[in-house]
Image 1 (cartoon, helix red, strand yellow):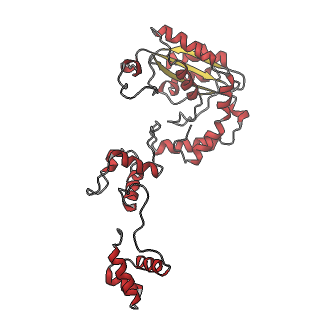
Image 2 (cartoon, rainbow, N blue to C red; image 1 turned 45 degrees about the vertical axis):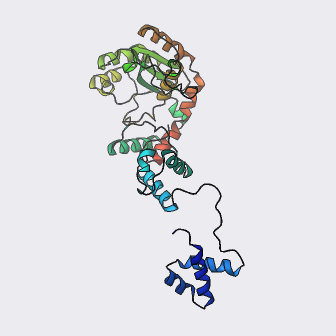
Image 3 (tube, rainbow, N blue to C red; image 1 turned 90 degrees about the horizontal axis):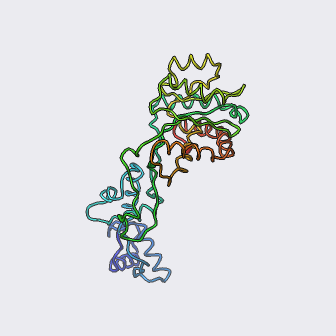
Length: 331
């Protein structure tokens, strides 16, 4: 309801003085009973009946319209401010910045959405079952596990980059990020890490089949193994092929079985890849061989304590998956 006019306030006072009840006055004048009571109490207490001036600029949206805007945003958090402004009734057009201001007032800020793998119902069940099966393992057990994975490193990173500039300089050559289709040339590498912080890196072809994967294991993993180590690999086709499984058995390699699909948040080597890619930003390799040399150099610079800290986070990762019933975790 809008503000009650001054003559209506006077009419309320007159009716109340004549002995009418608040309910009767409310019904006769079409004003809420609570408003009638408040106006009468102000008169009895000696306060003025004039509308008090509100500080600041008048609100463009009522409380109801603001709640409607917030509900629309929460129902579909991927709607833009421009799309949300269309949810407001036609007689209350607001600017884009005003819409953003109302959203920010309700703690609805625009952020870059995290990128996570698509999880099917079966994926969530397998993740949850796997974490429950291994939740009893402590750090002393996990340090015996060798985590491995392949990674493709491109010449030009696709990471978002911030730049400090003045207004109107967005498209100047100095302040733009130079992009190349498909990220330029790339190098595919295989890596593995241990609980003591040691690590190994191997260059491999862009497409790895079972035969090439077995050769990588022969050349890089076997010298890296200890007597009590367990080997972890994800569910890539070349990893779970019959030829690969037979090869691992003939080499007496103990495998961490049943690795859940779509679970990069459980494979701690993913953080090592992210750190490696971040460290090579700003380098300018001219060909694949130069990129490989840079990768080897930056790989050696990754501190062993960083890897040890990743191993210590494994129980927390499993607990996070269990808590979220197989869904995505912050890792």
